[in-house]
Each structure stands twice: as structure tokens, then as C-alpha cells.
Amino acid sequence: MRYARTFFILILLFCILETVRLWYISPPEMASHFNAQGDPDCSFVPKLQFFIFQVKTALIVVGLGIVTQILLVVVPIRMINVPSREYWLSSEQRDATIDKLSSFVAVLFAAILLMTQATFELAVSANLHTPIHFAAQLMVPVIAGFIIFTFLMLFWLVRSFRLPAGE
Image 1 (cartoon, rainbow, N blue to C red):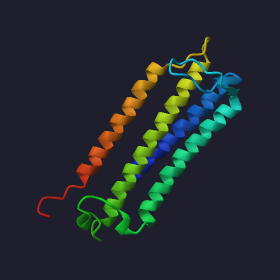
Image 2: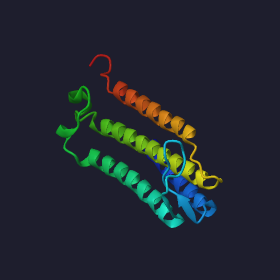
Image 3: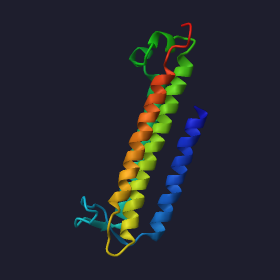
Image 4: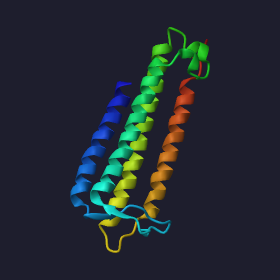
């Protein structure tokens, strides 16, 4: 779990530093919403408002990630649903199981944070060009990568809850 939390914290620090960097290179007024073709759709906001929205989004993601990890520790065991729960939630395995679930949550929320950061990066990048144009073709691999990563993490999680041989 320590590695997953460290990963989450490193991603969070990266996003904070990158947001500060983006603040300094952004124009005073920014397009904040784009249509499907990548063109701004008349939604321009001051730079401060744009970045307040980015920070709020990141805080929600971080908050949900932390609350989810806390819930795994405080929620009654009967409310945790994992395959072969009698084995994995037995007193001998419970701590390792909670650790595994918490690690999954930490890495998943780090991935969500990275995906939202990539979206804001593309929006800022669009605002640095004339004419302003959001590179929607770059958003497709971001979303696809996130979906693939999420499915791989879910596959790992489900596989990790197989019963050991002889149980």
C-alpha cells in the first residue's frame, strides 16, 4: 500500500507543479469549453476562473480518493464485497485485503487525476494558439488509455482475489 500511496502523492505533486507552470503561460482570458470539432463555443472566462475550476476538480478527485480509502478501513466488514469473502475477509487475511483494496483505490484515483490534468493541459494548449483550437484527436488516446488502464487494474484486482491453491 505504501507504494500506491506514494504513487498517488507523486502524481498529485506533479499535477500541482504542472498547474502552476500552466498558470504562468496562460493568457488572461481563456476559452473554457469547446465543441466536438475543437472550436471554442463562446465560453470565455478569466484565467483565474479557469484555474479555480481546475483546482476544484482536482480537490474533488483527491477528496473522493481519500474518503474511499478511509471508508475501506471504517466500514463494517459485512459491507465489503469481494470474491471468496470468507477467506479474504477472515481475521488472518483482512489486513492484507484492505491493503490491496486501498492500493487499488489509490492507483485508480491517481489515474483519474492524471486524466483530468491531461484534459486541462489540452485546454490550456488550445488557448496558447491562434486561432484557438482544442486538439480533440489527442483527447481520444487519453480517454482510451484511461479506459484500458482501468480495465487492466480491475482484471488485476479480480485475479488477485482468487483462492490460493489448497484453500
